[in-house]
Image 1: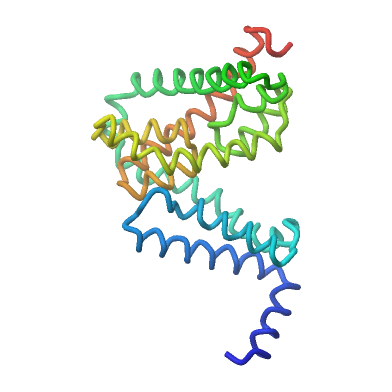
Image 2: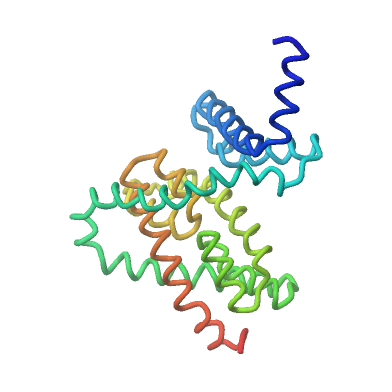
Amino acid sequence: MPESDFFSIWVYLSSSPLLGLSMTVLTYSLAYRLYIYANSNSLLNPVLTSVSLLIVFLSVTDISYEAYFEGGQFIHFLLGPATVALAIPLYQQLAKLKKAWLPILITVVSGVMIGAFSSISIAWLLGASTETQLSLAPKSVTTPVAMGISELIGGLPSLTAILVVITGIIGAVIGTKIFALMRIKDDSIKGMAMGITAHGIGTARAFQVSSEMGAFSGLAMALSAFASAVTLPWLLNLVGLIN
């Protein structure tokens, strides 16, 4: 392509919402190809790689996040339909769900409580402020719900959002390796663990392993978000962290 043509395309895109949309699709496509080329190495998780590439791109080009998100919001909008679509593989596991509803319920509630209070305890031991501790409490919940909980209990929603993304990426990267080390073979169990701890990003990784693991991860993600919203404020008030 002639340099003048490339420059013309860049000028057009840089002043259009298409920039954010184009770069999001392009970076994820490249990241996914790299992931497949590396034999699905979890350290090259497409989400982690594409986020890193976008950060570098925005930094080098000095484009603000707000300008990028004018186009990126179209991808963001698809999060809602994608979440609803999780009902399809979940329905395919309906027979197994009916048999295991009690263990699933106990697992979700226990996972929410352990995840929240282990984070708070570690932050407290390391000298973090109460506000930071409260921001950590909903870190394993999907971002919109986590930010709402954080604001309600006195945390920093912006900090919580960052922690949620980091938690999801770490879970997606190391989750399958931990399952292998623990010799866990049941995809429903792995899916529940991934959904409770690594929410949406972990669920995306779970679907790469199997539809069953993805279905249970999606279920765990939804139930843990509900359980966190209902129980966390009450539990934190009970232990005296909030009034």
